Image (cartoon, rainbow, N blue to C red; front, side, top):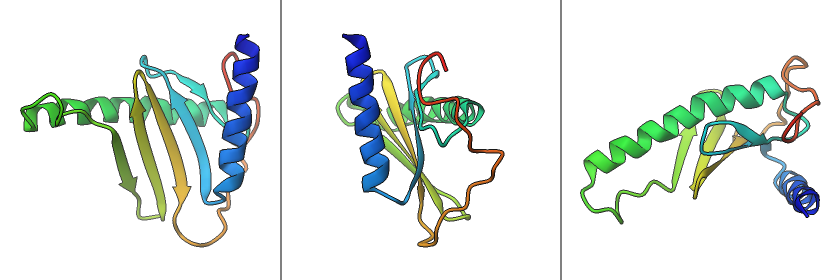
Length: 127
């Protein structure tokens, strides 16, 4: 049963990447900050890099938001959006114990990926 669910998730994520051509990549991070899903076009090292940096960043955002806002309903962080000078945007969406990170090209030009950054081997657990 778990295998069927995994292939269904992979199919949805592939469709997501196809439907939105400005998406460079994505990483699904569990509550421990470990990447559980990423596309085949992203290397494992890059997925771990995004997971390590953004899991810590999102946790710090949650802490700051709770300190700034008093009520529990208002202080729930749902997403964080970061825009870079290079024209990429990193969007982090928090749902239960998972964080979904999307890296998007906002330049309007085709994205050229470094050969060192791409490269297989990834895409899921145990890769």
